[in-house]
Length: 553
Image 1 (cartoon, rainbow, N blue to C red):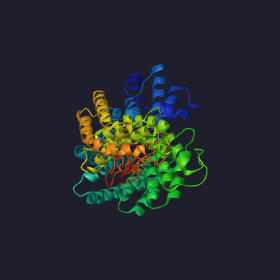
Image 2: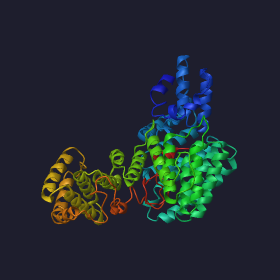
Image 3: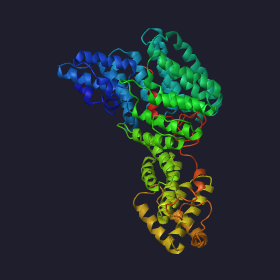
Image 4: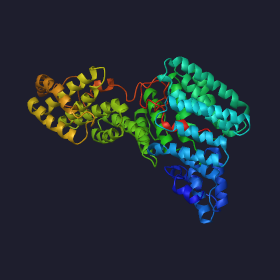
């Protein structure tokens, strides 16, 4: 197949290598055959710049009248698919399937099985059907290895990919603990199979990934054992000289260290990870965003002395600086909408707590745009509650009432009614500050109708706004009169606010906002979140699809 077909129909599509691997182009050859050799080497190493290297090699070959062979084209598609992250993620599966067909055509049966396995786990969810197909691929890989048609790295990779899919389904099993025990035994057998071949750097990568997965599913039951597995995973990454796949493992290890009280070591690990990277292997922007979020969480929990790479002099300043950096990197060439939304939520809250309501409002409004799925309900409620806090701080109680009521409507779907009741009370309080309760309620109803027409409310529940208003208007009539009288004497309710005082920030945020459910949590006993924490009630309840196919061969 010609190079033109490869470059136009997959090679380079959605590939961040051109940005993240720009340093790799320094001093690169111009000869198409040298470019081809370099692309093959980077692809064999799993280098993040492999996709863009294949793009340049294919273009150079086409100009010279040549073309990529089916095997080379397949490797190029694999490299491109591995770099499909963020918004480009859905393109990975079809690219892997095309690569598998080309590997078969080239007689590379082991590579074909790896590509097919990656295609199965590249989607947003992996169910029982996909796991059954992965089990079939594992049997085929083992059989091919026995007759010398699949090497150890390829065989181990297929088994590892099945293990990752099983790990993501642990909490859906009838007996999650028993299933976790079975998976730990399977991973132990995989490590025993691969260990004799550790002289191959590709096998070292599989060993590192297998140990990290073992650490992840061990962490909820035996944190000390998980630390041993995760430390071994990072050591094998370094031994294989392939540091570019280490970020997920660094996040897991740092989280395990935090869980065992080793905050100083966790901070040191994350700071070293952010500082690492050779000119030809720069840290991906998305990985840097995740590391910044995790370090901000670590510093926020335990603080820490000294000036850091961000230039901050104290923990509070450093947290804000790290969150701002996370936002910037999440908006990179291959932006991750959810990571960016979490970073904006965290930064918006940090600024609002410091009375910087205008900046916080802008960040929170953009964060809301990133929380669009059914599983993001807790995030939307929390964002709206903080938007209301900012509106009160800016002296805009009518806007605060709108946000509180929308948050109450969303929270009304939850089994626990307490949050909706508290948010409805806050709506009434904000309506009282807006003026007379009766007039404020009439104005709010008009605003809610406009919001519904504008699509702000979930289109699947067009009466949410009216429901929220009905639920709060009676409370507003009774409670707001009292609140208005209270505000007239300059004595707002103790928990409340900075609100009545405009932007002064006196009194701090409404404390109930901290009691709202954490976004995306709790994720499940064996799942990992955006900070690398396993089983914690924090953002990002499931494994990001891209991380299931990264690493390996």
